[in-house]
Length: 300
Image (tube, rainbow, N blue to C red; front, top):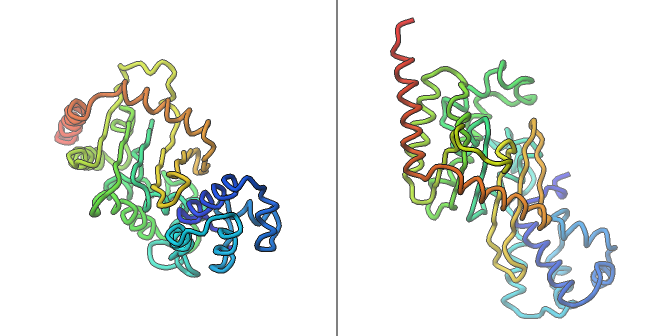
């Protein structure tokens, strides 16, 4: 099962293998013959599934006409991966479901993350009290997976967020429907914490948060959808990896087909153009925060 786990590096290596095959003008089946495997094995490698030995990778590259030492070093570096046996079953990482692990790994390698959210704050910008409110049984539904505590899940999400404050962080862009600010999880103090957290994050040069108020029409641009666009830079010749991740009712769908990704890019651009600017969004968030402060201060 571990060998079938897709990672960012495996996907990047798969793109390089596909690039070499296309450049050589051959087929996956003929490429497989170079290292004595079937077409299905080559197709799996292209899609980030499975592993390839150092010797086979060098043999495949050479057989396809790629003998440059620097390029071979790039391929071998992509082949290296720290996701060894037990990596996802220790510490906070065991709280990540199998479906989520690729997303977490892509986030860690990305240089650009863009997300649109209609109801719930995106996970990367949730404050701790908001995360804890989301993991209350009455909100989380079925609760945590067997052996996983609420604390495990909270710490796992906080660990994911570290990419936004690390040295050389990715550019992060979020478009939030006004509903994200007003849909209450926990209590009003939690929502106030969350909005103040957003405002603080939005002042970082690598983070842009835009709000889309109810009063601004989207003309069917797709604000009801929940998705993330991720770009992972490539050190090779195949170009950057660009993917769209759709999330619906806890299910995650990874999309790398160029037309499908391009459609979501177009929708995201339209929403970004319609949403408030960064400064206007901060003012709007402060307006909503004041309403929470007034309600919180009102005697019960």
